[in-house]
Amino acid sequence: MSVAVSVKLAPVVAPPARGGLALKVAGLSHRYGNLNVLEDIELSIEPGNVAVLVGPSGCGKSTLLNIIGGLLEPTAGKVTCAGEIADDCINPFTYVFQDFALLPWRTVGGNISLVLEDARLSARDRARRIDEVLDLTGLADFKDAYPAQLSGGMRQRVGISRALSVRPACLMMDEPLSALDAQSRLLLLEEFAQIIDRARTTTVYVTHNLNEAVRLGHQIVVLSRRPGRVKEIIGIDRPITERRAGDADLIEIEAHVWDLIRNEAAIADKELGHAGDH
Amino acid sequence: MPAITERVVPFRARGFAPRDLPVMGAASIAGLVLLWQIGSSLGWISPVFLPAPLQVAQAIYRMTVSGELWRHLSASLWRIALGWTLGTLIGVSAGFAMGLFTLARSPMQAFVGILFPVPKIALVPLFVIWFGIDEASKIATIAIGVFFPTVISTAAGVEAVQKNLIRLGQSFNLTRWSIITKIILPGALPSMLAGFRITLSVSILLLVAAEMIGAQRGLGAYILRAGDLFQTDQLIGGVVVLAVLGLAFVGLLGLVERRLLRWR
Ligand SMILES: Nc1ncnc2c1ncn2[C@@H]1O[C@H](COP(=O)(O)OP(=O)(O)OP(=O)(O)O)[C@@H](O)[C@H]1O
Ligand SMILES: [Mg+2]
Image 1: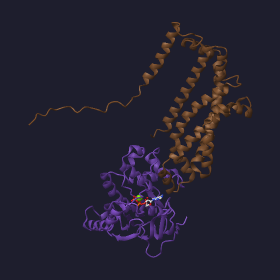
Image 2: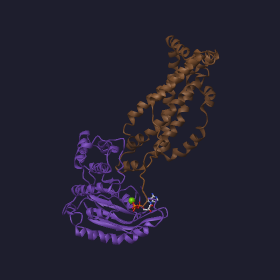
Image 3: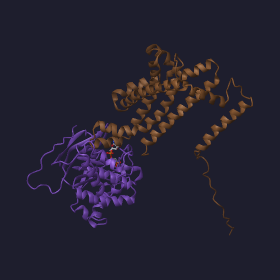
Image 4: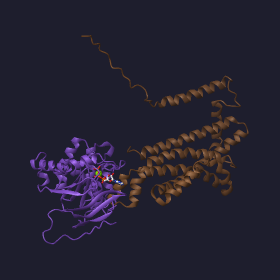
């Protein structure tokens, strides 16, 4: 693996107010065969911040996310992280998938149990963690239901519960709301804002939806069309939980981001080779 | 202005939706047997060619009380149990290897591709030479016949497991063993069970073929001997026992399926 994960101790002065790892992407490029997907990406994410990756479709957002989380080896460059990983963290880099990725033969509780069973946890601790995350996402009554019995929104709540149960240092979310209907998406967006704010883990969030981007992001990373390069990074300092749909500053940033990518998106839309990854 | 007549929009989506009526299935079998019995009673069907259902029932009854049925059935069941289990164990392991490992994949595909279409009955004489006329050759025949469909259905099942679920396991740092047993195995199970449905009937087929060569006991030997002696009531009786055996296997597998695939 060329993803160098160098875990350094946090500086002694001023302990970070937020948990999680600082992430740094340096000189990162990726190609699939002859297809140049990412070029010279430089990015750093503060511990506990939410970085939202936006850009025209096919520009390499999912590729970048998978490289950051160690599911894909980059052609060049590296990803490093810094900071302490808590003792109770079972899986530092944890994904929430667009298609939920739930095992249909396991119940809601069983799906969460799956990712805890390989860890050194007593059966009691495991059960406690499961109950804890199910309470957090309002799924307590659905513990014994099978995924097929749940709506899309509920399934993604299971996905987020599962991710939280391992107490991640980094949450990686690839369009977690895009498979949902518009209403579930709005509801879950509010919940995500609460959950992400409370968990205070470093989060990398990929979306096509600029409204989601300005609601959740501390830094919005705008990528150019393929080969993806960082076009601009926009910071939003306001706490996530204080943001509301329709806030003037958010609308302004959303419009600005759309200006940045509209032309590129239009061109990317007409390109061939949208094999996609899902 | 012309008068506008109101018409009902006709319903056009009729048909193409057959329903299951289990009662009709049973009734049609019963009806056929009844016709057969009537034909025999009226002398339209010669008892030498086709004995009446009642005669067959009597033959089965005599065979049961004399203990002969159990003598043959137990030998056959034992062979199927051993042969099927052996073929299934090796087939499932090989199917997993084929679905999981690059090194096993192409060689096994070639091997299976060449040998699968060969009728295994053609190999029975060879097995008799290799393993002797006794139990071993019969069990080997069943095992090899069960092996190939099992490999194919297992490998297909393993390949059909959604890649995103394997990705999920890897992204949560699950061990290889956990990914295989908790994600791939349950994911491949529906296809494997469909394969078992085939191999159970294949094992009955090969059992009878193997028992027709140099066996004293077993349903195949019994049927062969009845045929040699023109005792068609016993012959049909043996066939009925085989049919019941097949039904029992299917029923048993249905139970297992319903238990294991409850999540569907
Ligand atoms: N495994 C792969 N092999 C070859 N090409 C790939 C592979 N995965 C993705 N690609 C291509 O690389 C490019 C970037 O893909 P990626 O999925 O990272 O883009 P994306 O920004 O996430 O797109 P989307 O917005 O559609 O989700 C696309 O053109 C895609 O077709
Ligand atoms: Mg993508």
